[in-house]
Length: 256
Image (cartoon, rainbow, N blue to C red; front, side):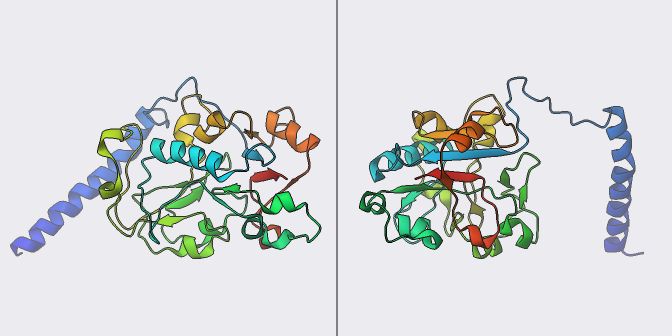
């Protein structure tokens, strides 16, 4: 047996031993993750959001929220076609192209509308991802595992809302290292990223950063809880969602 074959057999044996020990390790921990959940974490069966565009409708106000969101999540600042964005603004015609109405108040056509990932119930991005780098959590949040992302960008092609950005270059080269948030990971070149509904803040009992900074213009809560603030608003106010005909069932609603 040559040296390379002996090495291969040795490594294969170690791998097999590891797999054999894994169930025992899981059994010794009672089948639970060794990471303890934060007692302050907030939970929901289906997280959702309502944006009141009668209160939040200027590019300046939306830009302020985007700056807060991007700062917390170490989103690189790139002012060209390679822009990376989690929260941004656009016109009514681009935001709701299927719901144009020539008789709408002219003022609505002059508003800026805040846009982000819609965390759909039937996310097309999840269906096309070959590595499961993007997935829908049990609480409805469409999440990203940056380490599993291979940069194929199928999810970007599948998303009907343009909610995903690709890191064409090295993101860290476009970050102010003096203002880096050490509590959220930076990304690497060649991966997709997007809004995550601030899962890291929910895990410690906080609201999403944009919700907290919006002064009541953005309402967040459990769509499955009839007593939640978000459900109360949906009962009392007329809302619309983006591109209803594509069938993804967004979890973000807009008061117009």
